[in-house]
Image (cartoon, rainbow, N blue to C red; front, side, top):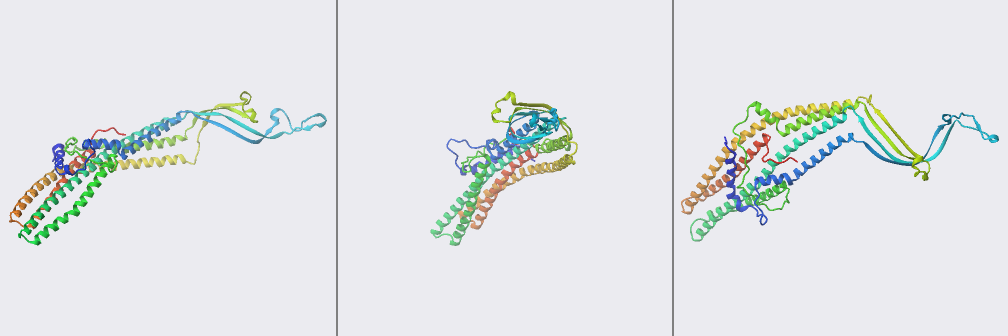
Length: 463
């Protein structure tokens, strides 16, 4: 079982000896990129973190929307048209059948209907006075949802850190793999040159020379693929850092971030407390509360609301009267009550749907807590296994190097077989590939363990 993360991270420094000469050159004067610097750059410039910042902006707007109900709604109006409406003259004291005009007397109609032009403009305002707690409920629900989203963003930042680490060591490992193959090609070419030189001097067999040449040529496709993978890994790291894909990279594999060792898992009670502190679990629990708050807000729509309204403007019947404000002013002010008494249970049904969603999310949270516990225990087992795997891989490389060196000496002294040397070369390559993977997995298992426990690799402000 690993006792410290420092041996884990220091072991990756050996990659420098393999990869240093093969990393792409950086711009003149640029400092080599450490893992910590890559993490901080990814958390400020990557598209992923910019998307998280936009989510923060969205919920800031949501909070402002919740407060909108506390402020008056003011609007301007302007109308122009022509119309007619009946008017009962009896409201002014006239009765139908009255005559006017002496000899040319005419009966007064009881109702008149006059078509006329109408022009108006002005301002009107509405202000909620009392909403029986709906405004406060909307604000509380928006704040809970904002907290849930903040927790979700914090977890996304932690996962982005692991993504940067994967891309960083992907670039390191792929370059080191390319370096390993190029070293193997160099050794194989030296062997071929040695055999061809001896054959020209009359020693050795042509079949042996051809076998060595065939083995050398078989490495070329592997080298080309390794070169392709190294280029793709460089571009992937640039992408997650928010850089142009073609930007050069110079990676510093000698510096490492400090991570506290995990010697054992906490007991059951402490483990549950640890799970409760994970940002994704907190986000789900807060989202459930937010849904419950939304359901409560919808049911509160059945409560009455009291509001004030006012209007001031000008009503004219001719265009030249629009400027006669004192004579044509119209205004109104008052208080109104709005109360939904029955809507076919539409709001109640909507609230029940949201309450069902909240209960479903609660069950999903309970399910996720169990899955997180499995994740933590599995990550700890992998964390333990990675230490043993790295030790075994390093021993295998040491043994393979020694075997290859001895067989190479024997072969050049005329004591060994070429097939044995080629087998030793292949074993050495596979052992070096294995140790590269083991070193990466060693570092990654430590990082994955921290993420499983709800911690980030570095402390960084959540967008």
